Length: 438
Ligand SMILES: Nc1nc2c(ncn2[C@@H]2O[C@H](COP(=O)(O)OP(=O)(O)OP(=O)(O)O)[C@@H](O)[C@H]2O)c(=O)[nH]1
Ligand SMILES: [K+]
Ligand SMILES: [Mg+2]
Image (cartoon, rainbow, N blue to C red):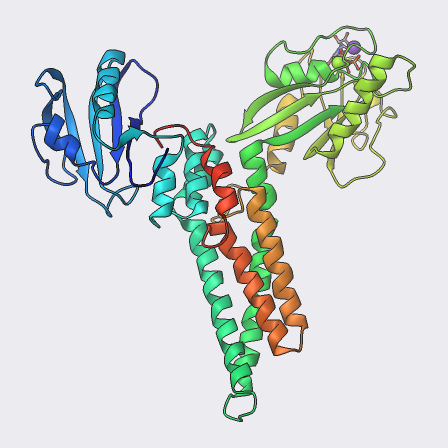
């Protein structure tokens, strides 16, 4: 049975063998590791070079020992870290040895972070940021994750929560003293002015959710157009890899093909799709259905055509579209300046740089100072939307009781983002994203 009173341990560094392996221990008995295996206590937060011996005095390894007495540690509990040689047998032996300590057990995935949350060292947004930081693969993902992990976004939410609490307190006061004349009406007016500002701030922040999603999940570009427009050829050219089959037979691509490329620090997901046309071929029809479905989820659609009047623009939807003229090596004279947004040929090749620039221009602006203070997850966006709805309800209502109740809802919604309230059901989901040792 896992219990919070256990002392937990695990390898916290990556795959073995490695130059150095870091083993982490956290819990009430962590410091006994220094006493029993490392020849005695070590000074807090200073690396101490020690010979590490088993209980029966056999030398296991020599390494650095660090002690972080709680609460000034990652988990908030007493922690000890052993930096040893990263050989499999060394690590195995040490883990075995730690397993023999009373009330010690191996940590579960994310358990160190979960303890940090339980001890109030980190809130949920910071923890999610940490999980993202560990899995970050692009520069933008790293910057987004870092902003969340270091508490920048939590600070914003805390500031908002404080203003909501203040507003509620003032309204409650007005309720309590409604019969008396000594609550100045201007207090209430000032509160509602601030709530209006708050509402706008939250809306602006919510508008950044798309940026957060693009950074985490990638910017989705669907390549579409009639058969033989050169879609697969363009995918291959942009990916600089021979991924999709290219032939002069119309209807070559049926399944959706996808490849990730990296652009200006973002993950860009390119999708090659079946050529759009009327057909009785069952397989091709399914491919076309999938192609159209994908357009709905796209951030950008590249509509390809090798003839000026051949563009098949989607009928509806708000997705941005770029008209890309293809194969312009064949008959460049067909194309006047307004017929397409970009002109390319994969043969010569030409126009690919211009196409890449046009795509890059449409990526979120990473230069703005607050580009990374955006909601990074769906759950944040959902709670913020609830918060905003309650706030707007409160502002509309003339009844003090209702105003107070709606403001309470608004701050509860904020509290759920950082995990201050009512998130028990969420915890397993969030911490399961972690690897063991974090
Ligand atoms: N000259 C020239 N030919 C091209 C160019 N791009 C593609 N082609 C040719 O056009 C034909 C069709 O290209 P694909 O890339 O298979 O076209 P597609 O749009 O994926 O076709 P489907 O998958 O069948 O819908 C192939 O024979 C390509 O070699 C280009 O820039 N210049
Ligand atoms: K083809
Ligand atoms: Mg194709």
